[in-house]
Image (tube, rainbow, N blue to C red; front, side, top):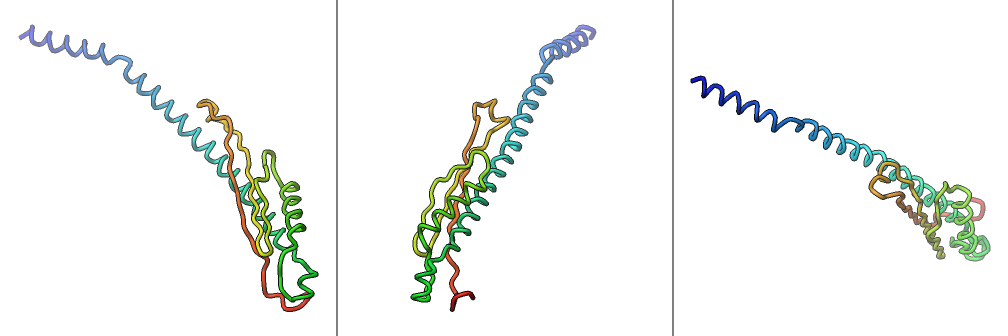
Length: 155
């Protein structure tokens, strides 16, 4: 009986020696995954903030440009259409005046009744640099039209 008891205890001790350090490996893996998740959340928040900034810049530039109505044409025909050159200049100057660092104009398209402004913003990564991702680009685009309903001048 003592041989059986010694064998069981011996096996238990041998098994403990084989499992020694497994908790340390598991903890190291979980810690690495926690840092990776924290990095994704932090840099994901930076990307979303950059997207909102790019979208807001595009929205406001398109809105400002959509108010550049061709007044001569309006006085002659009582119809609303955009002054294409003035609208493009207004959109460009609005983006340049209100942009944050890393913002670029992708396109400004103006037709008689539509303005489209596209911008992109470079976002610097923090935690993702560890994976080799130093920066990312986010885009914002907005299309607006001049509002109809003007029946006479100065309404």
